Length: 289
Image 1 (cartoon, rainbow, N blue to C red):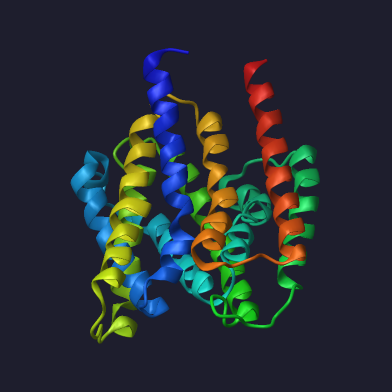
Image 2 (cartoon, helix red, strand yellow):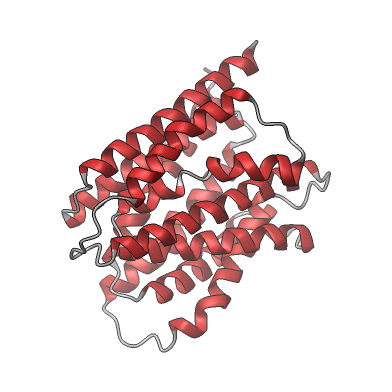
């Protein structure tokens, strides 16, 4: 493996680790969900604008439309994480391929294979296990039922964003990239819920440190690492490396907050992760033949 490729793969792996810390950090910061959603995205948007030239190019209606879907995802993920367990929030969002199965043919005119449809069966069962799980609240997950529903909305909006990223890639406009859409989306998320985040009030340095970490590192630098590495690693390899995020996310929350997922959540996570990895592996083999 060439040295440049190794460094790029490590950058994606590091980005996956940074992404995975979102659940624990969101629960750590003593802000309301609206405050975290707004300020985290505002800081992330500024970080992306500073670090990535692509984030400053191609601001038009296409990335704005995709950015709207991404903004909903950012907001819903934060709100869901504040209400339910980190495992539920991240893995329910990870069921987004269920919606892509429908949205791809409708919006992109892309055909769905029988293999894709079969992959959705364990993912659908996993989603059902999450949504039908325990609804008793706890210290770090005060309203799991509501949080799970918001996480499902996050999965739907993320599916729209993924289809939108694909749409941007097919548009022929090299300047309107997914990084542009993500930057716009974070800006929209910040502005959209800012009225619900005010007044900010007094908070400790620890809380502000967690919030700044979320915007600068967990989103901003993580996206910068992925954006710069994709020219040296394939999209398939990057997607497999990024699957480390949902695995580590609940582990950080367990280590930091003592949050333990339910048995149903663990089974659902296994089904979602297993189906996604299996489909990715098959796609990788097909691409090499």
